[in-house]
Image (cartoon, rainbow, N blue to C red; front, side, top):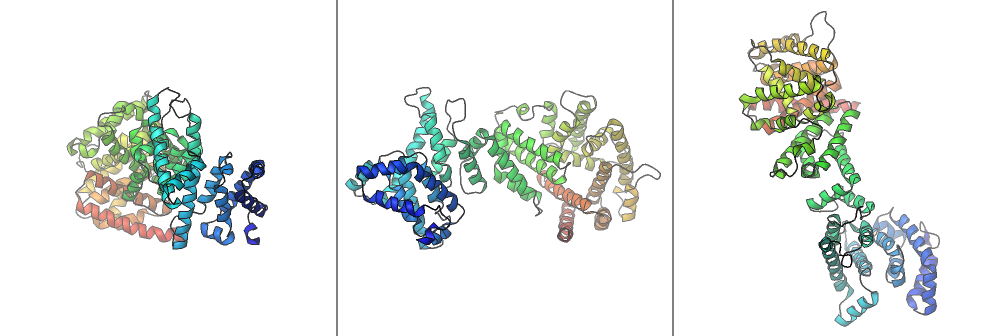
Length: 568
């Protein structure tokens, strides 16, 4: 017995002896002794759980061979099960014994034994122990047959009661009391991952009473959300939506969990990130209710500010927006919510234009749409409109980042003699540097116009050299050095040029090698190629040669970037 006490509360053997006496005799004196010791025994159970929860079931059984005897005797005492939080703590202790994936018959038997005890504990919340025993004796059921059925019926009964509760309105005689609902949610905390309790967990999440405050305990929401994130529980979308609408911390934790998954050391393609997004249910939930969208969007906004506009964060926002718009089109066929409820501080006209997918607009009208977007943004930003400042409108615009890239492509592929439209130049300058003042933005437009003039002349040239492109992108002699944002914009123009110009494919690798002098620029180019392929996929672009080149460059650059990261 010495090994039993190692690591467990010092009075373990004392309580083992007590339980033996309590279960062997049912005299009045024994009952008094039980009642006298119930508070201390509950505290012992709590301390025992703190020890057991740090171990797996195999370790528990090896180190404490009599633990099953102690738990079984405790579970069959009606006095212990009727006292305060003792049943809940016993459930916690029993859950420590369950092996999620039993590897042999011994572990399977332990799981079955544990589940029978759990069923027994739960059944006593609704039925008197003597009634259960009598029922067993009269019908001749063995516990192995009786308790799973009893548990199933009890869960279905509670589910039915919860679902009918809202039909009773304010008829207090027939309604389940808020205290009972709250108690039920607390009891379910350690049981949320057990399949038998799935219907009850769902019924609690979708339960709507008439109380002004939340009746379910916050720990229940936390437990369900954690189980959902770890894929230990399967719930319908409606239940998950209720969880996130009723408990803000769960929604925030889910968004942060997804964010950490996406912004990881392992470089994920945007197509793969899109799969993660959809699997999380967040885009669907955001489309279902504006309150969810605004919480998620605010977290993205904070991440963008904290990372100083990191390209990885920007890409995640754009992929999330793509998934959100797709879900919104399915969800809001009857316009359940007005668009203004999703973007309450933005210009409704601007939102309507940005939400249009370029794929749904004839390519010949893209120029017109871009001009319209530019004019609306410029009026708001430079004429100090009533729809927020430059950053808020830039943040809205970058949600739909494809429009900025289409702007660059349209300018590059225009006629060499044609004057670049000022509206499109302004849109490019704004997209790369929203915080710039009017004078700085004008200077960026001048720089971009000069570079575009050189590039459009080279665009249809069948033979090009890396030196030609360097000269076209070079800064004017004697001028001030370009601001970083302007330099980044020129690099993007060069990359677009390499993918679309007939002579650009042959020199693409050489030009990119000259450009990627730092890890930051290398990552910037990788991000550009990845987003371009993702955008073309959704646009159904048929430029097979350009797509093939972009894929090859992306693969090669990722292979080059990996050794750099390892060396660092």
